[in-house]
Amino acid sequence: MTTTTTPTVPAVAARPRGRRRPLRSSRAVVGWLYATPTLVFLVLFFLVPVLLVVRMSLSDWPLFAGDRGLNAPDNYVAAVDLRLFWPAVAFTLTYTVVTTVILLAVSLGLALLVQESSRWKSLVRTAFLVPSALGLASASLLFYALYSPQSGPFGQALQGLGVVDEPVSFLGTPTSALWSTVFLIVWRFAGFYMLLLLVGLQAISGDVYEAARIDGAGWWQTFTRITVPLLRPSLALCTILCVTGSLLAFDQFYILTKGGPDNSTVTIVQLVYNVAFQGQNDLGVAAAVSMIVLGALVLLNVAQLKGLRGGDR
Image 1 (cartoon, rainbow, N blue to C red):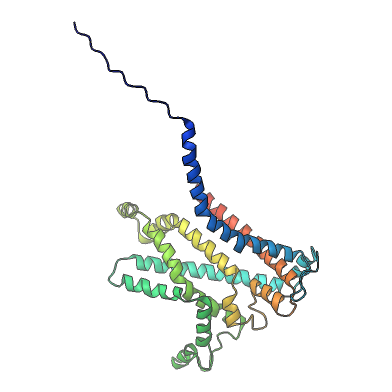
Image 2: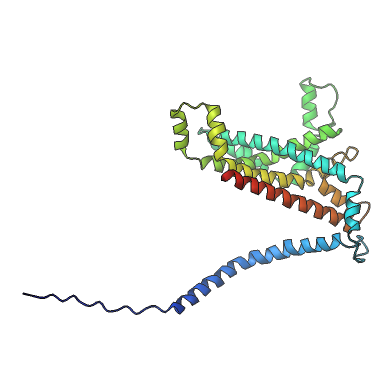
């Protein structure tokens, strides 16, 4: 009878727990080094200006006299009592709703169009994206020339087609000024939002559409019950960006209408500019209006994010 002896495995020395700490600490240091530029940028260009505006909103701060001491809450009372405050709020909300609905509808339509494979797909995508490369101020100046009743091509084209008999004033009435500005914004941003929605469309698996076709779903059923629900995160992102940008509208109205006619197109941000630098020259009241706008934006974005999370559950 033979006996076998199992070779003894040398015991592995237990790794001291303390040796991992330098590795973890070095990773933490590297992480902080990566995050430091962003943190410095955030503090210098967001946190410090916001704190300065908060101080202005609580102080008597004329444009050319500087800080004259505490003036709270009189600045906020004066801000709400401004003659154009509530008209500016109403116009800004109207402009935001109209622009958001039209812009998202057009962008989604363009995304569905360029998603289909065709020999002109690349050319069409590029054509829709070209306006996004133009700055908003430059685009506003371009449309200011295009809308000119005397020399603008739009009015001449309508007259040439016999649609109108007299030169058209695209910016002469409150309604025409609003829709002319909305047309500019849709032309300028539709390509950008189309790109965001196109990324969301391409993330939807083709198997889902194939299963819907096998089940006999039509185009409308596929669009409403598959495309839109699965595209909800991209739609929510576009909605947040569009609403925030529309509530902070300034450039297009300042260049196209200067708030006219009869102050009918004064946005809330343009009101801040007018109070601070034109007329009253009161930085304290202007800062109070800015803080009201900031608070409304924060509440609106929180509500939108909660709505998005609630829909994902």
